[in-house]
Image (cartoon, rainbow, N blue to C red):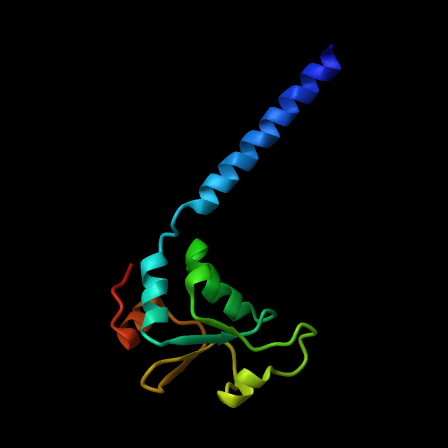
Length: 122
């Protein structure tokens, strides 16, 4: 009987944690409006999955990362550059390209991105 009780409690705990995680992931991110505004402004964020600065830039947006206008530049093997980034003349990561054609290289603060896009700071 003890075995079954332990198994039932374990299933309830795991199920509860999975339910909480599903609920948490369905909630809006803190920076959703800002990330969406960046996208709507025509800004593009070029990066590579292996780039630590790109990962840090994404991490600054938390759950709102999924709304960023991100363009992956690296093939899966991490060698070379995808044609879309070659065509855009991306030479370093991260690179932000704005609707007016200007660029900012490296990790950018929310303030710098807001200034370039007229998006309200979160």
